[in-house]
Amino acid sequence: MSMTLRNLIYTAPFLQEMIEATANLYRLGWDERNGGNISYLLNEYEVLPYMDVDKVIRRTVPMNFDASELAGRYFAVTGSGKYFKNVKEDPASNLGVIRIAADGKSYEILWGLEDGGVATSELPTHLMNHMKRLAADKNHRVIMHCHATNLIAMTFTHSLKEEDFTKTLWEMCTECIVVFPDGVGVIPWIIPGTNEIGEATAEKMENVRLVVWPHHGIFGAGATMDETFGLIETAEKAAQVYTIVCAQGGKKQTITDQQLQDLADAFKVVPRPGILNL
Ligand code: 2HA
Ligand code: ZN
Image 1 (spheres, helix red, strand yellow):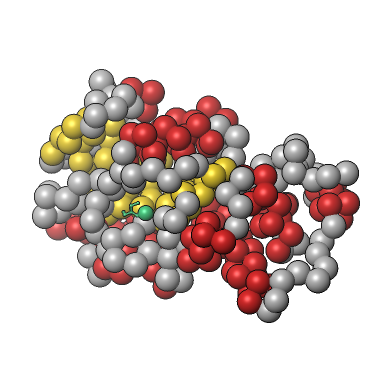
Image 2 (cartoon, rainbow, N blue to C red):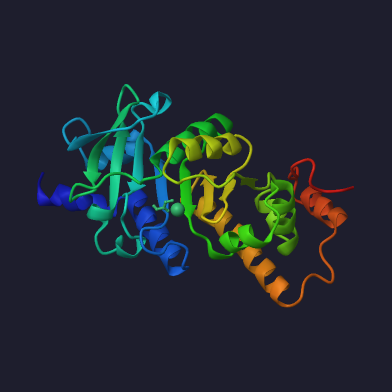
């Protein structure tokens, strides 16, 4: 490939978004070392200006789960074991563009993941979540995982019942119920990188766009990088306020359930049933 075409991909909006998102997640302290991963569903027309997709297959990597629902789909992904801290300096080693093979049992690396890299270790969860969210929302495109500090901390000190967890987050910032009226899902502790944690997360993603992994981190889903980042950022901010509220001695007053319902009505969102006591 000519140098010109080789460098052209650095101007791709989707690559710029991946670089910015990973840089911001690192800056906020939510992705230490190789923590966190992102996958971004791309339309073929977004990829075509930068590569001849039938000629550039560099490696094929097997997967031990069935992703045939996503056969032929393209994703920008972060690399397994790669550090978000390093993405900006060397996108071609730390990020990749992959395509799910026709039989759904492997993926093809079209760009990046140089030095023999592979897609994120959480690829099963990412692809299973993409399938679930696409079924719920045809505009869905982004799955993001990070180690948001205060959300992790809350999984040690707060009830893990998802109704309780959701209610506390909604109370901590007025915007929360508007940003995630479906609340958050919480799965049991499961070994990361496994199909099992992917299946448990995807089951929740049928109804919510945020899933908490106790003592580990959070997964978010959305139609754009900004929206997905903003979703996680809003939940993490609420968890940070909760941390400070607890440190200051606990709640003396709060947003009432009626006020939360009034907010939902004003912003025309429907809060997940079973959380507000009215
Ligand atoms: O990529 O965050 O959950 C490292 C992780 C695994
Ligand atoms: Zn993680």
